[in-house]
Length: 304
Image 1: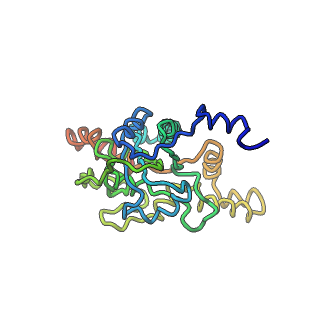
Image 2 (image 1 turned 45 degrees about the vertical axis):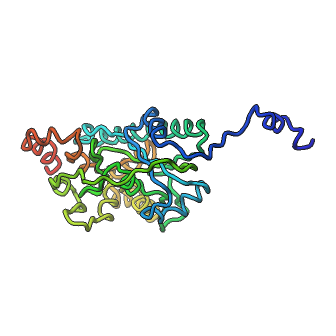
């Protein structure tokens, strides 16, 4: 059978299944409305060739070779569960938002594709390109992209602080093959009120008022069951000659924590710097109205 005689090819050529390809400039307001209708709480647009993101351009082009712009999506996290001393409650909130974000991202991509705009949603967090370990395994930098897209500025806690939702946001990136008629730019102020609460509650001292944030201390504590911590745990299992020796090396609580991480999904060990942060319009009122009570309720409990 000739290619031209194939039913699928004939249908395409007869315009019954004509591939929608829109090479026009995308209207930014329309793109943002698509994202918000799908569940995004905020959204910004940046061009791929912006100087500050060029470091990531090769990776992004390897994902979609004709990428021209990026949509940065922010979804709100409920800050109240993060303030609970029962960390399972905070983890449940993170997991809820992560799962919802995947659906939101998928809906956005579907809507963009339906509008003739080729798009790809990038993974948030894991999975990453683990074959590149120990070099950089991530392909995007959502915090940097979000700053460029006007979704906030970096706080002392090295979290993106949104002008409305503060540190309580999850960020994601969607690649688009179209240019946009307008792009966003960084905020002209920082939502951080420089209260220093994140510095005071950090259990590892990683958060400082200066710029020398201790990434390794934060990462190794918060993501104990991931990558480096997981490798260490495997080594403990391999090197232990008996179950008794293993239990001398690894506490039961650490074993159960690793089991939970593997069975339920990625967990975190700390979110204090998000929990106490009063940045943003949603949280600032409680902080300003009664600062002493705010500190007693949200700072002191994490320092006991």
